[in-house]
Length: 115
Image (cartoon, rainbow, N blue to C red):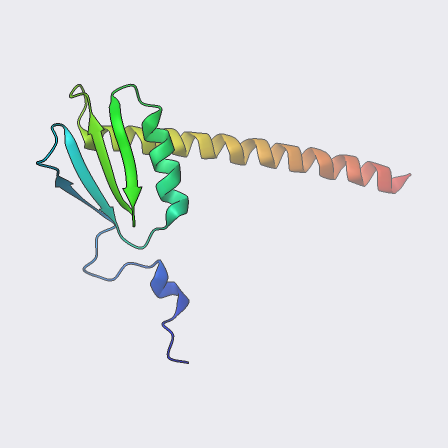
């Protein structure tokens, strides 16, 4: 009864930003990105995509503060943008292949039901 509405868990308020970058002064070529109203699902996917980048020397997150360190050839922000673009591409492929497989199974199921 006193619990917040479920949409408040993922809808940003009027003055909230989804992501903010803070330079990490303790290590070179590092930034900390703070994501609002996201969870481990996105955190783990982004971290994994970042670790595929040859210029990323470290990527890790905790409570969805994502720390990225690069070799200096790209900025942490550029590495994050590239990882997100890669993830979107992978998810588009997954969606396309899943839909294709679903439609094929539906056709096969319809054909066997007619027999």
